[in-house]
Length: 272
Length: 358
Ligand SMILES: Nc1ncnc2c1ncn2[C@@H]1O[C@H](COP(=O)(O)OP(=O)(O)OP(=O)(O)O)[C@@H](O)[C@H]1O
Ligand SMILES: [Mg+2]
Image 1 (cartoon, rainbow over the protein chains, first blue to last red):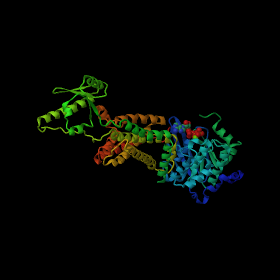
Image 2 (image 1 turned 120 degrees about the vertical axis):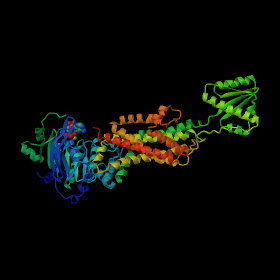
Image 3 (image 1 turned 45 degrees about the vertical axis):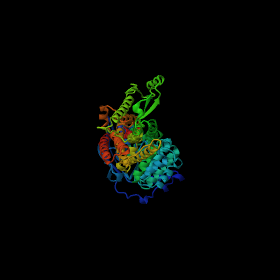
Image 4 (image 1 turned 180 degrees about the vertical axis):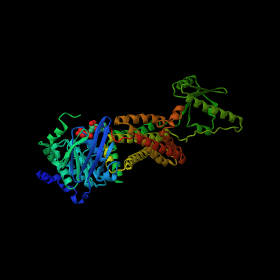
């Protein structure tokens, strides 16, 4: 099934989250080379080999998912790709530029939502996003617009520690997208969201992706991966087990759904 | 530039909305100034009281000039020479209401004092002795062969507020710097803001600059409030000539204390640990640096320790420029020393620095 088919299957955009808030595709940069190339990334924490030889390639404009049980190494892989941590071995290039050492010119073009939200203490939702916007040289008007896009206008004056878990998650996402990045990393963006917020977020991500942005996300929701992702990578024990379009991969393996394939690949026992 | 401004705003808001931090770093030192200033207000000039029983020639015939000079240090209460008056006078000395009793037996002036307060009795003895000497000398009709002119080294107007203001202000600047940097670093690390900033196109100098900027504004505001309050007629601070040199001194002090805070914040993993460590550093440093009381009477080893403390030098230099007519000569070496201290500690902190709590 192509992306257009999947989009056609989805309900129309709710008015609060219409895709008009996203810059039109014409302004997105021309596709030249892959958005991400990673070669044989390894990262060790003491006794734990968190990432053990991950190689991947993500095309520009692709919607890419990373799946895997708890502790599989998804977050660490993302951190290595983003340049937040230095890989023990291997290297990653984003948009043609090495992500380590830190390169501010590259950071301007990527957006990141960390797994646990990172907010300035005692600032309100509006102050948070305006502060982040300023770091990227983005106007306050655009920041407020982004707040509206994630449905937090009513909570604009609420302090960071008084937001509900889902609201904090939405604010964190808004902060990651405020500067219209070409490449977005989202670590479990929909965990803890109610069905409405989740749907709205999907629409936001999809329209963002349709506008030419590359999106990489991790998720524990097979449903989400099937709905959103062009391709997914299934990870376990720091390795990529399989990569491919979710439906096609399941069909190929002779199972009904991505979830069945996931369990087949990673087993059924609990993870630490 | 926008990154710097917005980070400064974020820090300032975070600080001003933290009531405990505002109280401890901004209001608490000011309360100390107002309280200590009021408590020690009249301690500068110590008046002694002498009870004169009956006639004492040297006192009764004192020239007007001498009497006027003594007025600040000595009050003489004259009573009649009866035995009852004498008993009463001695009782007063015993109870500490008077510092001595003077009477005259023929050509001999007798002073009775209490050994309980040696400083006071010493003063009274000294004053009386000089009165007697002067009377003797007058009696010879010759000009004096030797004269001792003595004045205290301090400006004669020196009142406790003159050293309380620089001392407590130094302490306030130290608290602001150490706590500001330490808390900021630890909580931004724990809240993962540091890692988020790593992933934003912001230069380290914007982040550090914002912290320094916020602390400088805070320290200057504190200096202004301190000087204003201490200069109220009630407290009566007298600023001397180049008092404005306290501003660059406060700035250099802020950098030095921020560097201590940076070291504490790099080392401590939790806010509680940072708080404890900062307290352990600041309180003893403040005592040993003469923030609360002058170090003049302190034993040698205390002074040796205090010589390596940045606060001691800051307080001394501030006292010099604010209260003792000091100038560039007092301020410059201290400013240089504070900056050097800041540079060394910042270097050390950068070795211990961690982006995340894990
Ligand atoms: N900072 C760290 N220090 C030490 N060990 C770490 C650190 N971060 C991750 N690990 C370990 O590395 C392994 C992979 O962790 P990672 O966070 O990448 O997993 P994940 O796939 O994101 O899991 P989850 O689905 O729970 O988010 C885990 O075993 C974890 O304990
Ligand atoms: Mg994770």
